[in-house]
Amino acid sequence: MRKKTFAAAVLLAAATLTLSACGSGGDDKDASPVSAVGEDSAARGAATVLDQPFAKPDLVLTDTTGKKYDLRKETAGHPTLLYFGYTHCPDVCPLTMNNIAVAKKQLPAAMQEKLRVVFVTTDPARDTSAALGTWLKGIDSQVVGLTGGFPAIQTAARGVGISIEAPHKDKNGKIVSTHGTQVVAFSPKTDAGYLLYGEDATVDDYAKDLPKIINGQKP
Image (tube, rainbow, N blue to C red; front, side):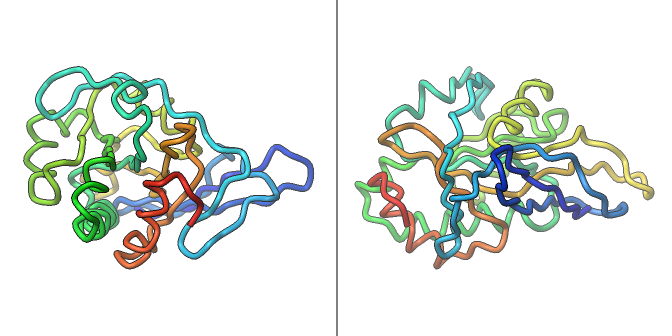
């Protein structure tokens, strides 16, 4: 199911940022505003640069090896791309992760070592550590896959302006997970999420921007 959600500004006269979601089946509908994007926020190519960066979620989940992973601790001081999605997604999730993986492979080895790419499932009941590991192995085995309790995942997503819903069955009885499809980029200098990429971001977009993100710069 693709639905439109909106990130509304809480500042005076602030602009809104349209967010999308992926899945299959069901009717389009609008969700409540979930994040603050100031009026000075600006799109620079594929990226939206936030004038009020997001704090990195205080999130401890389980990685693909079954070990606890503290997002803030493990990614501190590293350029980090964070995405919320699920392995049974028919379209946007695999495309987004593959685009990032292909762009990442174009980087010099030293830059690849610095970059952290984190995929947090929105469908933890099906996306076990083993399932995440198998799925990510086909994309980029260096991506950190995380699973855990849905309430904690939903709270973390909302903290960076992304709305997700609990997995549910559509009218055909298929389980779907509706979620915002933005990639949040965190600066290695501040550990704050200062860039948003939509589902239309291409391999070329990421390839062009990643060197600057890794250096803590704006694209």
